[in-house]
Image (tube, rainbow, N blue to C red; front, side, top):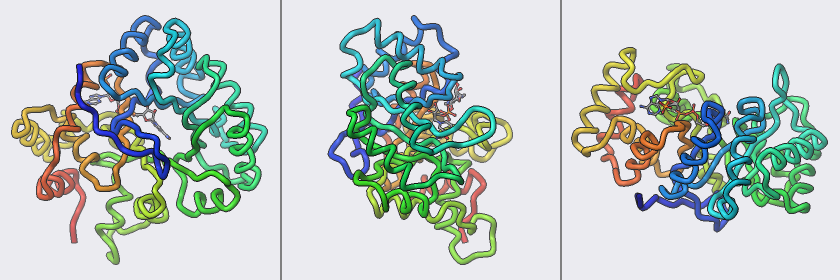
Length: 310
Ligand SMILES: NC(=O)c1ccc[n+]([C@@H]2O[C@H](COP(=O)([O-])OP(=O)(O)OC[C@H]3O[C@@H](n4cnc5c(N)ncnc54)[C@H](OP(=O)(O)O)[C@@H]3O)[C@@H](O)[C@H]2O)c1
């Protein structure tokens, strides 16, 4: 099915990437044969940008993906493959050189590939010597194991500090963003107020990434809280769902596509990382690339999600 996927640029590079990508955090819910069908369909849909992390399913998600790549020679070259490391399962974060370089070797082994298109540091490590972290990334580049770099859940100061030592540019910052979790947008809307939304939680990360051509990848785009469940069709969000349903009817699409269109409508050219492992759901989500919400619709959704405008 050709859905004429919207393309954006990966950060400041010339690499064209789909505006909707697939996160593989939940891939361990699939059997290998199911994952194989799913990935091939995603490639056909034009959303062939896959996001992994070494910790997803304790490594099982990457293993399943690696097995299906092994079974399908030629599939690897049809996709952009990204993974992350830096969270040590259990209690700590580690951005040291030794840890990151070894972690990438583990990722490549599980994914059964020689290189990652994009590697992200999953979370900042309070004890990281950023010069050493940068050295890890340069080493990975020199060895041909990684083409592009990014971070996830980083504040702007941390990106600046890492960039001070890096030859290569940071292309991505992967952050949580959905209609209900939109602190990076709220802080800009509620500037100079005493409201909770006025709090700058992330160092003006939205403006910073736009100024520096860093692609924001939005994780958990349909979840509320810290991955507490979806707000779609959820009776705890009556006004939001009423507005989503109204627009879904208007655009002859699903509430899911409208929630995705809300993210894609932002001029920052973000990349939405969808986490569903269902082809039918992903098709619904990809329909969002055909919808351009009006300014009024975008703001009505924002308000219906419970945010305020001064
Ligand atoms: N960098 C980080 O710290 C971080 C953290 C978390 C996640 N991530 C990345 O972000 C990706 C996406 O995260 P996520 O899986 O939480 O994202 P999501 O797309 O917001 O959530 C997907 C989940 O919501 C369910 N869902 C139920 N109703 C839905 C609807 N109407 N529309 C869409 N989904 C619905 C899906 O179930 P169905 O199977 O029924 O579709 C699926 O289990 C992950 O795979 C991972 O790659 C990164």
